[in-house]
Image (cartoon, rainbow, N blue to C red; front, side, top):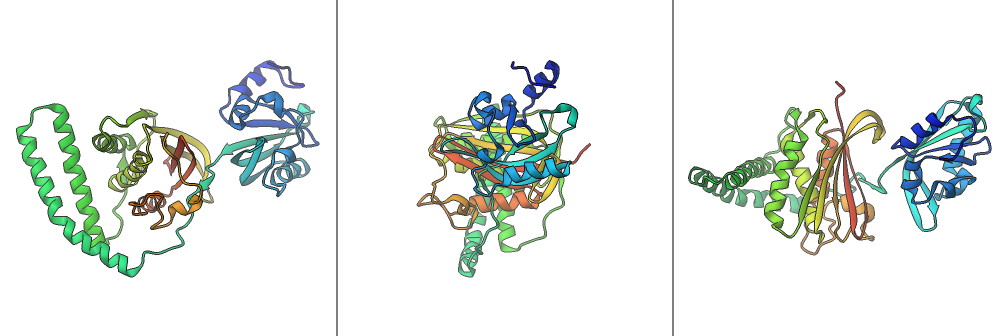
Amino acid sequence: MAAIPNLDPPRVALLDELATPLMLLDRAGVVRYANAACASWLGVSARRLLDRPAAELDSSGTATLSGLVARALAEGGTFRAARVRISAAAGVEHYADASATALPAALAPHACALELHAVAEFPGADPALELPAALTASLKGLAHEVKNPLAGLRGAAQLLVRRVVDSDAQRYLAVIIAEADRLSALVDRLLDPAPPRPFAPVNVHEVLERVRLLAEAEAGWAVVVQRDYDPSLPLLSGDADRLAQALWNLIRNALESGSSEVRLRTRAEHNVTIGAEPVRVALRLEVIDNGRGVPEDLGNRVFLPLVSGRADGTGLGLPVAQEVAREHGGALSFRSRPGHTVFTLLLPLAEG
């Protein structure tokens, strides 16, 4: 560990343990220290960041980063900027919400701390298109046609429950019944839109497990669905069925992208911004797959109705997932490249 002027070894060790990317700059806006998280996130060694002006790392062409640092140095306090585009290596760009904080004179030559909180390259944009009236009428017609087969499916599953003794089969039959009920409620909602149901405490991992069983049933042995859950997460206030719909849309999207592996990850995230609102504690739920990725020509448009990267796609899955996120005061975003796509659902958690 290199010595850092006016920072004792324990403090340096603490900075290197932080999961948040952090740089310390001098009064000229030049990087004098970068922690391990910052170097890892930017994909370069910490040494390659040293002695570089903040302006050189800002690839947006708007001098946002250097302006943020200059304001903190001139006025003191902390100043923030959303979705700053940053690059430390040619051809590789990252997006972050940045905050610059003026440091006490006793820490000179370090005059400014620059924190970088990674954000998705493509946040969910407000849908600019509405479903045409003809399509709405067609959906209602389809809803009528679906109700009877759904009732038959549920009845058959209930009969099988009485005859099957295998515990795994019983579990899958319970999923079939629960999904038939959820789809029936969705059909009723299409035919006669009702006000949203009151939120109730929801264990997000129970919802994820329900959807994971669906994914395993659909994918068979072709896709491995992995779990990486944080068991300490508190209950979420929400609508379990609507959340299941959103998560199933995200997971099915991953299954249909040619993935061989899908990972479901949950974590608590502190001091994030959702939309324009600061949130002290949020649930960060990620659906990660190793499929083909989102086509480059779709970009922000994937959250618009009827936009799909597949010839047989409806283009409704992601808009519905985004709608559910917003119903819960959250946000849906993604980042993607071939072999690694991450859809991130951020939902505010009530503080205990």
